[in-house]
Amino acid sequence: MRLEGKTAIVTGAGSGFGAGITRRFAAEGAQVLVADINEDAAKQIAEEIQGQAVRVDVSKADDIETMIEAARFAFGDIDILVNNAGVTHMPAPLETISDEDFDRVFAVNCKSIYLAAKVLVPLFKARGSGVFLNVSSTAGLSPRPNLNWYNASKGWVNTATKTMAVELAPSGIRVNALNPVAGETPLLASFMGEDTPEMRAKFLSTIPLGRFSTPEDLANAALYLCSDEAAMVTGVCLEVDGGRCI
Image 1 (spheres, one colour):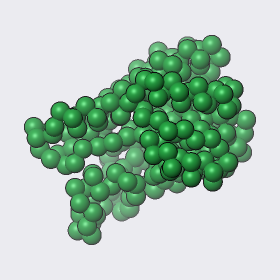
Image 2 (cartoon, helix red, strand yellow):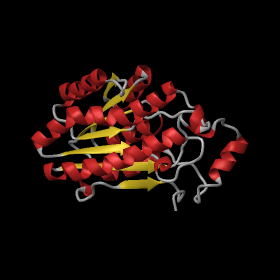
Image 3 (cartoon, helix red, strand yellow):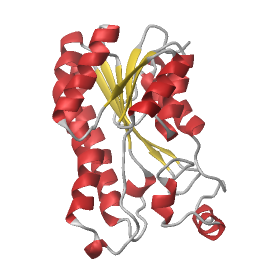
Image 4 (cartoon, one colour):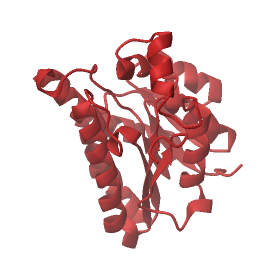
């Protein structure tokens, strides 16, 4: 019960890493608002953990405000926000990516963190505490060819995490990030271009531990960084990658 008495919002929580984090937080005693653009998926996870669900497009300011108000209505205070929702573009030469795909990647992966911070930072400052956890990617540390703008968006997340951490530390607010290698999530096929045994073998050959990351791997790391056990940890971009970035 390492999060007993805590409240949390997890975005992109209807599947993949977000669902894993949500389940672990709930198992450790937290009340969790399950936020996802797929409302049915959010409701399914919320029912499983006896939590609350809300549909949210994290790239839209109105949706972010509605999400945070829903959490405040359900729980009162908010202790933790996990910015997990993310998208990518299909692998392709950087000059061929459409304006629409570029804008969508940066709106979901980057602007969403800005929008959430605008609303939540004043609430955290008023309380003198709060935790942000941004789910980034090894793509922001060790970029792969043909995912250029996705890589760049995750590099932005890493830098934003560190600058948020140093600015907000005097207010008692901690900000960290997770950098997972690709896992068994809905984005896996997009990263590889196609999900075939040959592409999986090629991808896995770059991971020293020889497997993809799992929602449980990310949940364990998220639990630590969002718990009071990590009270002295801020500005960290933790690699959960089986050694890929070595």
